[in-house]
Image 1 (tube, one colour):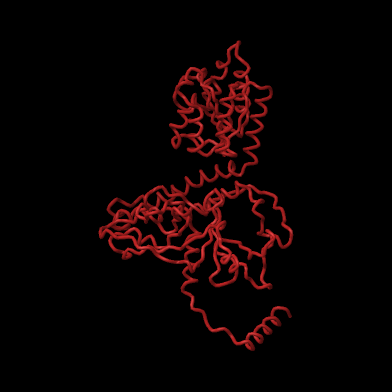
Image 2 (cartoon, helix red, strand yellow):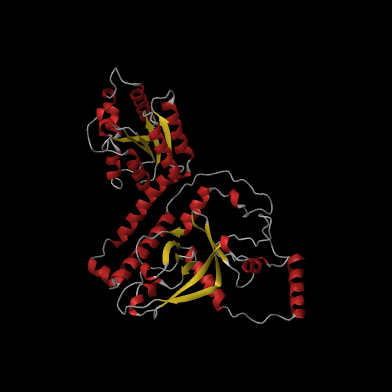
Length: 450
């Protein structure tokens, strides 16, 4: 699969005045007319860079004369791996805000952006650095007129193409995702609108939800069947006894961000859903437990006005009594001493902090501002919200005093909810007597150690 680079530069007007995407063919066959004899150094460098890219069989080059054209065609154009972004648009500078267009570009498309411009203005440089801070590991900057800038830019692109997991995986994912969607559409090709309604039911809100769940499940299954060649990496073996245990300082911000993205989703509509996390004015958090099938019909008295939830405690806000309950573990049990304290180790979301039946769970990285929440299964409770005796779902603004934070994603949500209900419903059985316990343990010891 070819690595796609898009050059956004108003100097491309000298190739062809167009508001359309310039192909590699157009750029290649019109390049000779681009540079006049009296061209400045930055123009010659751009010419040399284009020439070097065109000479690389692994890279496909495209172009736009300004960023508004790129942003106006997101979703209609090829997916680019790298964008080379000019900052100075000459006569159009008063119309085009390069910082605004850059933010739109990185928000709207997956790519790495190299700002390659000859502008030498400290105000613009400060703005670029500000945007770089908002989008770490997405933007780099090189001066077009500097000696060696062509070689440096080409080298950076080559390194990104060969060493970035994101760059290599993105191409495969796009191709395989497209194939997966096509396979689903082939299966649905015979379905007319009437049959669709017969299959999906009559309630429009539920129909939409069911359709999305049906398609997404099939999409996932199709994608799992596709061939992915994941980039290999050398695995560094951990010291014995330290696997899975890290101090907070060892976790890079990018890893936290990835796990936050994997575990949570921010849903922009107004509906209350199972797995939603809300916060009140006292910074107290709750996790919604009521099933979606009840929430979607909340106001036709499906739940009698009862909304179930679990209270969550910020990990930084635990009171001493709670800490003592969690830390009171037997000396024979494994302990996590990475922070210099005796803390039961945790390896996954559904791994309780300790062996007690009512021991809590931790929801890490709920926000990227280091909000980590502790959930005690026994803190299951409810609130009453007046129903309107009409069809309709429960809306977020009906949770008076609460604001939406995020939503726990699958597969984490279903497993956590199951664990919570298991802890609430478990009755247990009588313990063996002391003598029987000793006998059984003796039998097991002999069986497993002989």
